[in-house]
Image 1 (tube, rainbow, N blue to C red):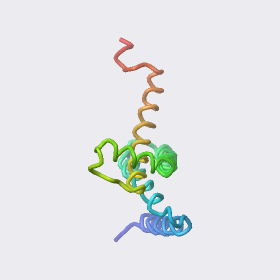
Image 2: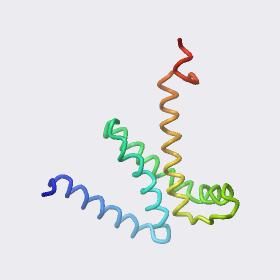
Image 3: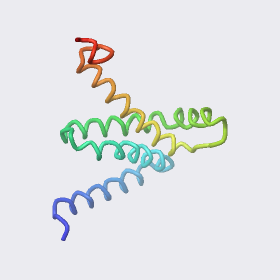
Amino acid sequence: MAEPVASTSAWALLVGMLGITAVSGDQAGIVLGAWAGAMAFVTVRTEMSLRARAWQGVLSWLLGMIGASTAARAVAKITVGAIEPTEPVGAIVAAALSLVLIRSAMKWAERGGQKNAAADH
C-alpha cells in the first residue's frame, strides 16, 4: 500500500503541472521540458537538503524556460544540423545544464574561489 503522503504529493504535483501547462498555452512543451530537465537531476540528489533541492529545482526550471530556444539552437549547431531539436528539447537541455553550472559554482564558492581543493596543501 502506498504511503498517504507520497500519494497526496504525487496527485498535488500532477494537478499543479496540468494547471501550469493549461495556463501556459502554446508554451506548454517548454514548461514541461524545463520541469523534466530540472527534476531529472534534483530528485536523485538525496544527500542535499530538501530546501537546497527545492531552490535549485525552481531556479533550474526558470532558467530552462528562459534558455529553451538558445539551447535548441546550440544543440543543432553542435550536431551540425544532424538533429533539429524543438524548443521543449532545448528546455530540457537548458534546465539540466543550469543545474550543472549552479552546482559547479556552489562547489567553487565552498572552496573559497580556488581552482581545486588540492591547491591548499
